[in-house]
Image 1 (cartoon, helix red, strand yellow):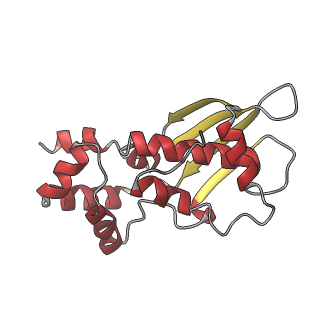
Image 2: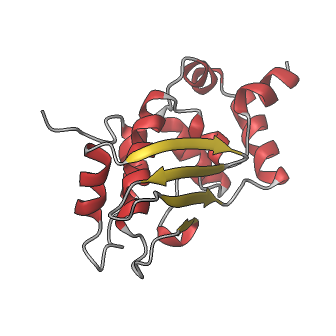
Length: 170
């Protein structure tokens, strides 16, 4: 059975970042790496993703991916706007990303999803010159599935503990 990535609209939007950046044809190989279990660990901490990806060498490659965190102003704007929109808030609390949230973020000038590869800071310890290399691409595919299952991870990757901050505001 073929694995699919980005099964929700928000997972697909995450993968959109990969489009038009694959000058060296690394994405298909990255998807193969993701499909065959070559990514041994993925940890998310402080809006960064750290992973180990097994390549041809005996020691796995270290991959890190980071998005630009929201500024304090962006966090406050977003939280204030969400509190005023109970329908969006209810969907978020149900662990879904409503389409209206993307529109709200656009209106506020806040990027929830990366717009292009320049919005993603990625590094890999492999000797490949391509960005993204197949190891980075594999991790990005797996992040899409994590986002499908845990959509609030999108906020965590931007440095915002959405539920914690909403709870603080009552």
